[in-house]
Every structure is written in structure tokens, then in C-alpha cells.
Image 1 (cartoon, rainbow, N blue to C red):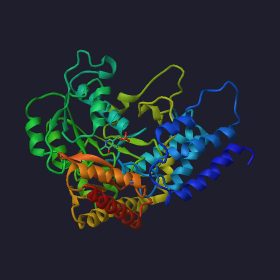
Image 2: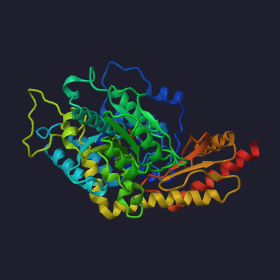
Image 3: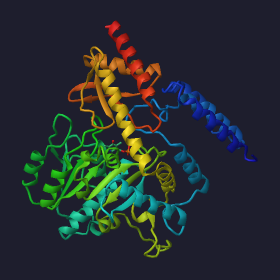
Image 4: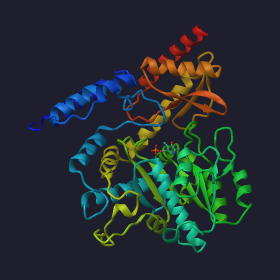
Length: 460
Ligand SMILES: *Cc1c(COP(=O)(O)O)cnc(C)c1O
């Protein structure tokens, strides 16, 4: 290869991918070491590309978290399927600016195709519009911008032209277990992050429809209801059918944050968890979590394309706007210039096929169930949630011991997961969202977790 730096990356990639199943999942280096290796002064002279790439690999590798390891169970992260990685490399190689059809025709069409597949696989109403965004945060933002536009338009106010100053007040209602990105999206939208009326949740973290009903009738105002499919701790689902039906009745917009939970729609076995989700007005989900495409990738879906487009579109005199028949991605997402992230989504979905997507989602849930079943039989170990999806919450006696077990598992390196708090208790939080995780990975990880629990016990 006459581009030496690319050859180096290619060799490193092969080695890195081969090492994933066995290398420690945790990073090896502490911050001081990384600063020594990476934190260099910017030198006056140029350095050949191949040398820079070689140095970068050597300096960064000890500081890499094994997020694409089959035994990474932290947060809700997901790995990268080989085909998605390959398509993502092409995306970088081609370096298309996916803002406009005129600057990236193939990217625009790959995106509209992937959008069609997504709407279908996720069980959303035909005609739903899609924005390809950086993740769940921006998907929530985009959907709630459309919601803000629509509920104010219904009240005779053009928020895109006139902003919020002097506008009718919007009432936002959200579950008390909403994800923090909902509050942040509301902040970005000028609605304030403490504006939402919070509806109490049940013991699994699901919004209580009876409590929502009481809140809805309190006042007649432009209203946005934020529901959730897939609680970030327990994996539970708000009861979407009653939520959507009573919100519709009240003339409210329903937004569903389904960053990973929306993927339950791909499985006939799991779809009941989402019953009624197609009655909502907008939905947010991620590609970089359960679809296992590389960062960054999320989707904003809207059943009211006019509101979605009004909230996002842009006009400038030098832009070449597409004919009606062509799709300008920037009309559907908040970015202007943008990476053509639709290529990886297109490739990932095509390689898996409908059946492969279903199987990947169900496999994740089966492995979460396996974690729960094996851990629950051990002495002094409690599984605290109903394992309905891919999330498992585990306690090891008191908070201190649970936190100590989490620390020991992280340091051991067989697998990686993190802690959280659930209903007033410290928990170990296990999220299975990597396509490559096998039953054997679960068993090895259970072994490491139980060994850590035993060591923590001996200590106390
Ligand atoms: C992860 C997550 C988000 C945020 O998504 P990002 O892709 O990290 O921006 C929002 N809501 C829920 C329920 C999530 O799990």
C-alpha cells in the first residue's frame, strides 16, 4: 500500500479485533500515564503521517475501554458489527457532506432507504419522517422541537418565526424516571430543565397512567407528554397504549424516548412491551446502542412530518435545495454540515436482514435473562428488577458491599459494568447490548462477578 499510514491502521484493526475477546475489558492506563504519552506540546515542525499514526496507536491503546468487547456490559453501549465498521470506514473515506442532496446524493438516498427500513422494523406509522442525528440526546431534542412547533401552532403561535417570547406557555409532562437527556433537551428548547410536571412511577420505573390522567385534566394548555420505552436502569416500559390514548384525548403530543427499548418492536416476542407505541407523535432511538453501528448514530422519528420539517429546515441563498422528490437531510436534523452516518445504518441493516435484527435483539434479552438466573441462585445476591429486556440490576447485600463488588469486577477485567442507584439502593447494572456477546461470555462474566462478591465478603 503506498499510503503507509492506512496500512498501519489496517494491520492494527486486524490485531485489535482479534484481541477483543481476550484482552482485559477495562483500560490499563491511568490519566497521568495518558497525559505523559498523549499530552505533548505542539511541535513547530511537521511529522510524517505514518509516524503520527504509529505513535497514536501506541499512546492511546492503554487508555481504550473495551466497549466493543463481547463482555462489555456498562451503561447501554453496544459494539460495532463488522459490516457497520467497514461502511463507517467508507463514510470517512468518501467524506461526504450529508447536509444536502446536492453535496451528497448517494448519502441522501442511502439515508432515505435506511429510514424506510427503520420505520418498518420499529413498527412506526407509514409516512413517519426520520432525522439522522448523533444519538438519543439529539433525537429527543429534535422530536421535542417538532412537538414544541406543533402544540404552539395549534394555539395559533409560530415558534419558529417568533420564538418563545410572548408565546402561550407549554405544559410539559414527563415520567419521574425519564432519562436526563429529556431535561437537557427541554433546556436547549428554552422550556427549562425543571419545567416538566413529573408523573410518579411504579416499582419497575413505569409511568403510572392513573397519575398521568390526574395531571392531564388539571389544565387545558398546549401539552407535551414525554414517555419512555426502556428505562435506563431496569429496562421497563411505560404503558404506552393508555398513555397515548389519554394524551390524544387531551390533545397532547406524545414523545417516546426509546433509545434502546424501541428495538423491542423488531421482535414478535417482545413487541407487546411497546403495545400502542404507534399511537405516539414522535420517537427517539439510537443506532449506536442496540443496532451496533459505530458512534455516533441516533434517529428522530416524527408522525407529523410538517412539524418536524418546520422545526429543523434551513434556507440560505447559496444552498442548492433539492427538488421535491429529493431529500435534503438538513431539513430533518439540527446539524448543517454532517457526516454521512446513514451509510453504516444502511449496511448494518442490510447485512443483518429483518431476521438478523430480530435475532440480535432477542439474543441480548436471552443473555440478560441468563445473567439474572445465574446470579439469583448465588447466596447473598439479589436481582432487583423484572428482567423484561436487556437490563439487570443486582445488589450484593448492603450498598457498600455492592459498590465494592462493582469496583472489583471493573479492576478484574474479565468484563466491565458499572453501578447505579435503584429505588434508594446501590446496584450493579448489567446491560447486554453487544451483538457479539455469547452465553459463554455471560457465564465467564458471572464467574468473575461471583468471585468478586466472595472476595468482597471475605474482606468485610
Ligand atoms: C442512552 C439514552 C439516551 C441518550 O442517548 P445518547 O445516544 O447517549 O445521546 C436517552 N434516553 C435513554 C432512555 C437512553 O438509554
